[in-house]
Image (tube, rainbow, N blue to C red; front, side, top):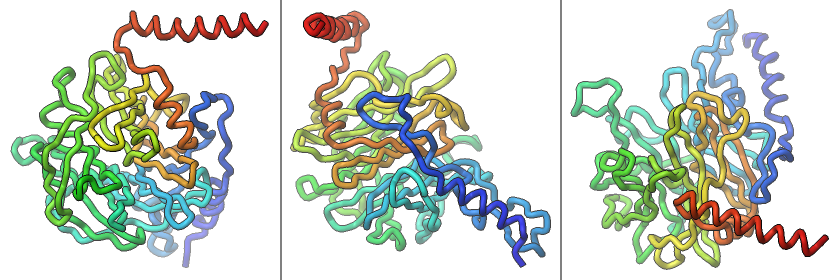
Length: 389
């Protein structure tokens, strides 16, 4: 017999899931539209994933396997639906991947299943932050961080991050591929490029162990793999480095796979800087050349998106993180996590993103030049206002 409390909680959850999400009109900037409510939270997770529903074995209806957070989701538009591969973190701190879908892309997200595949890497302790790429070879690839204990040191908190990979054609059956190998002992934020480059698979990477200190170099790299059955990165080259007193002075990392436009590849990434309250994660954009994927051709000034309001508070506060967007025709759905706690969406168009990336004043790196840059805009508008009195 099912515990009667289940039906009461199910009714409350359905109300949450079916709640219509509306544009937050107080946050207009013309670039994208943010929404009033998160699209996925821990309260969206099915009750049967958390509770033993049987009255006999759970008479007090206790939550047996609690969920802590739902965040850092890969995203894809597939067969008429927006799908998220959600990082679902349990009370045990382990992150597992859960598939959710929505027709609208802005509300009514429902969890479908947990993702499972053959356990080929016995040292993998945790997995998180999957990027999804629809590749021209016909497969959808999931590239994620596969974390393990660092056995070289006697420290229970010391971890090593490697890159795990899976592939699928239907989002149901997943094949585990070998881990991506690079010269670095630490790799996070690896992303598969959607097209072959000179007949090879191409990846954006971030070799972490060599470049973690402020000012020590590093950033987003680019490299090639000949064979996904033996995925070894060749010839990593720096694409976008860190820089003093910027929003990416501490570290940066590729978000989802870039979007191809007539002018270039549009990249959405995260940048990290230090503050008195700890690290601050924001999102920024840049563009690379259509033919030379390591050549940055547009570098808008400052952040593209930062945490606002309730987004600032959570398990790891003052953080926005992105590793997924989905494209339906010309419309772009940006799925971002706030403070390692819940998922949000912002919507825009490819034209708006292209306009933002290529027409926003470029990063100038000095306050003196930043003053001139803003005064140029002020004076232009002053003249326009005077001429139109």
